[in-house]
Image (cartoon, rainbow over all chains, first blue to last red; front, side):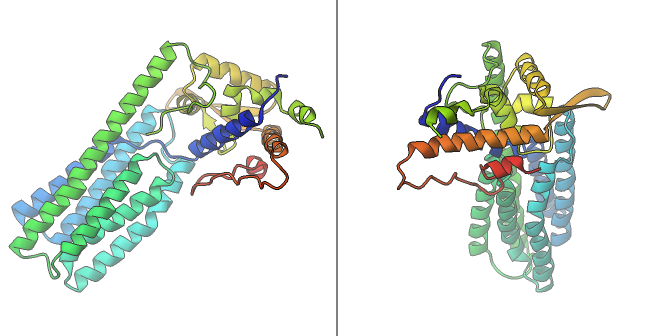
Length: 227
Length: 127
């Protein structure tokens, strides 16, 4: 057989490492789910602003609907890909989210009982950022950016938050605005970006296929475009 | 062992670029579907089929056919022989790199991220 140089051996090991990492990643992130979650959050803002619905109950309701929307679109994507929904990678991603989700629920109860509801939006943002970052170790890059954005927004919101209950008119407009700008807008941008990136990836794959380069990448090239 | 002997140890079946990519992916999972492999590696149906047939014939890969929502689905997994061969291939590559380095230079530990497997033959052999 043909010989192999040390450089080629090192490069091959590097490609193998990249591929093995890719095999452990969860790739069924749905752009529609991101957009759906953003719209549900905006719906929550509207409910709060228009009908002054109870603070904690409204946002816990939003969380429940957002989870359902997310699972729905992920299931649609898995079905379209002819893949099972509950894969090993999916289990890993969900398990990595659970600690921050549990912390969120505990802090929600504790702060609400202490009459510190105005701190909750910042806490929710921060902990959703932590959860997204935990999941991002097993997903493409997009979720990392989402996590960092929420951690930054949460930190800023907590630093600027007044303390006390969220029942006053000012507090109401503040929480509707901050939740709308973060859980609404950031998710919409995230979902849109994910869809655009996947479209680009599909186009690249199609052009690569039509160019007859089906035998995989050349030496040193990545095997697929990362999102 | 001489460098030539070491290079001769490289498994020719695995050494081909496409099959190496397939073996690397399958080493990290219990199984992967044809579509998942195709999308991850950016291969055409025909190319992937040819490689999978080669790997199946030599006994490195097991094939399981089923139906999901009345559509046919083909899953691939590494056989124990396949895992052993992949581990041996990695070991040989590392040997080539080690042999070229001065005795005083320690081999670089492969970078590892959270959630990613270790790049060692032991990993490749793990179930």
